Image 1 (cartoon, rainbow, N blue to C red):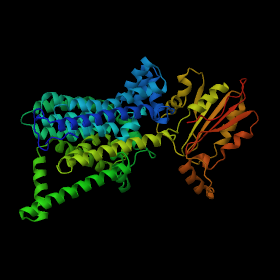
Image 2 (tube, rainbow, N blue to C red; image 1 turned 90 degrees about the vertical axis):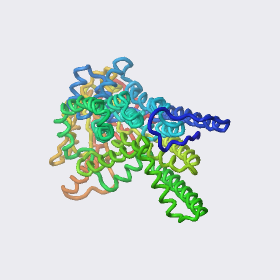
Image 3 (cartoon, one colour; image 1 turned 120 degrees about the vertical axis):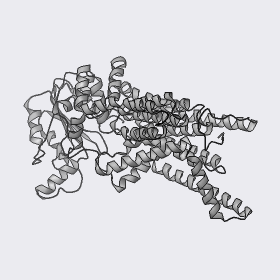
Length: 560
């Protein structure tokens, strides 16, 4: 990569220097690596997992998107998620239709745009080698690739995190230029209206700007902070739902544990082997740099350890004025604060660390750049690691089914069978915190999207005594023709014997669902009822329907 001396750059444009033919070759190689990374990342985002059906969380997005504007606002008012992503998808679907590709398109566009805007916004404000390495990492970061084909808010979070980090870096570098502070505020507003947990990162960055520029840019920073009043107002409108859902006994987010720290490191790197290889690269670079420093000190007659310590002390002293270093430190402080909060509140999931990732990437770049004797080889090794990680992720994801909690195929079976009423049983062993009418819309999404007149009802089992749900299904299916049942069996039956006693059975049901205690195949014995086992792996489904005038539909499971 084309390298410039850039450990301490305060403001203005990046200084230019005379170029030689070797410099031009290095620049060409650097630009080629950037272009290849962006194109490879775009291809992986576009192709991998694109043919899989919308799964449970994505169906929520699709359900909002196919409502009229009143229905969409009603659902958003009940949910506790920030509304920007869902409103964006709703508007997109009104123009381009409600296919799986259309529902996922806004997220795909956002993640494809992230490395491109990073490259453009850092032009003239960051040395070429740093800008190139940052863009390559953003383009090939595995979570950014994965969430590209997820119709959830996380693709917008990836884009917003890159924008906020870049504008924060620019504000530090320009010593609080109004345009950069305004860009940071708007990026934070975009992030906050996409996911509320991103406010932790925005708060730490905002306090940092206030501390650094309270004498020279107090009004600019203050007005930038006022942008977050919009986020606060929207959050307060969701506060009741937020408290109700986060205090729910079976809330899916949990407090942070020691084991989760490993998950956090794995997520920030993209994969465990990427993390381990990066540790090896940085470790080898540190050892080589220390050896070179010690050898140089020995030639001067000084102590080796003293020379190494003095050199790194000087590097850290110089780094205090480096926007790259400061951005990384602030991101690390924000990450630490979030993890501390997560110890006491159930708000931890690795994907919620997305806002901190771009700043952590800059920290990696600073460490590599701080060691002149190894920065070239370490830089290329880092690029190779992220390329390998992205390609291996693509190959692995293309070979397996990832989005398994879906009922598109099961809905198609019942639609082809001509059913008019459907019982839907989300058999997870515990209730959900949402009202029944809302789940009815979600479970009936695949019927509503194609205009099928099918009445969908959610079956809510007995979560007190955990009584047998099968008599309800038998009665429902046998009362009249044209009725159907979708029973999700996750985690589902197990070959292990059912524990004796009511307590053992209840424990099994809470862990694996009702189908782990009651044989779901009993419906096959009902005269006039046809049943199919569908799905695969940990999320199989069981579909039944009573006789109709139509011929039996094709029941083989799709390839994916």
